[in-house]
Length: 382
Image 1: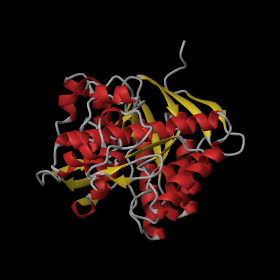
Image 2: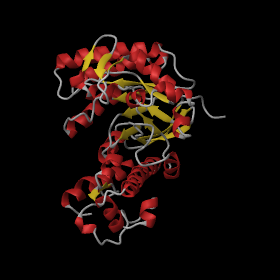
Image 3: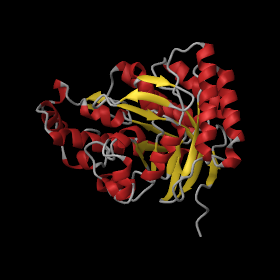
Image 4: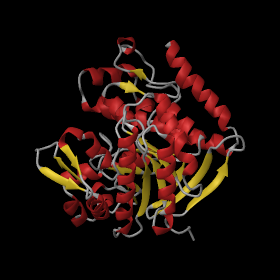
């Protein structure tokens, strides 16, 4: 019999680092960690169907509370059986709280104790979202993991603003926990605090104290919001030690493979980002040796696949010259093929990382990733 929904098993810890193998049990099955979660903002990972993601072996995907609330509406999705049925996806789904999207509408929003009023980016309608509304939408969507509503602090932020924002996030977290949830739905709290270690520690400890009231995971928020890379990694390092060890740790919006490797070494487990899909639409391919522009003229007559040795559907059948041609003529198939490859690359990278942790050689994996993803691209050797 499988463990209870919400259980997080630590299966193995690398002997020489903080990296760990885990398994989170959700209503729609287990998720092995460390894991990368493709982003399906509007109930789709752009250009891919649910069957594509299944073939690629995606363990879990994301949905966007803010966007799905606007279109087609949580009530419509609920009436059609929830987000899984709506998009035909059988695996686990994590939905964000909408806090980051509201953060991105900074010029159109007003924050109060009850939540945030803002203008729709689609038609300018005045809307409102707070902790109660966010959890209600996620309940209607029926996601496996619902994120607590928070305020995503911009970078840079003054100590006073960051402190007030963290206090607000914690008050909203308590309101979120009081709300009903969908059957089997898990809830993750989000650690904020900007660049200030004492605020991140305080936020993490306060959220950890709420765990008995119904938190099954914890996330590092407020990174990858425009700050330099050292601040991204520092924000993770300042947050993670104060999160419960026996719960999954999720770094929100982190999509650089090297940064993911560093975060796994700090004991983090879950990651998401739009980078592999967005960059595919811009003609950039990700490989285990770093990214490169498929649209570049150097590949106009190349018979090579996107990445030699890759067994994704695009690489098994098509050449760089063909994919480049499709991209340069704005054919939808070009975006689709490159998205298939990029998502496959990320999932493959995570599988190799899990194998390294299982074999107690994560530090070797990390060193090789540094050489491939940090040093080689600088020298222009792909």
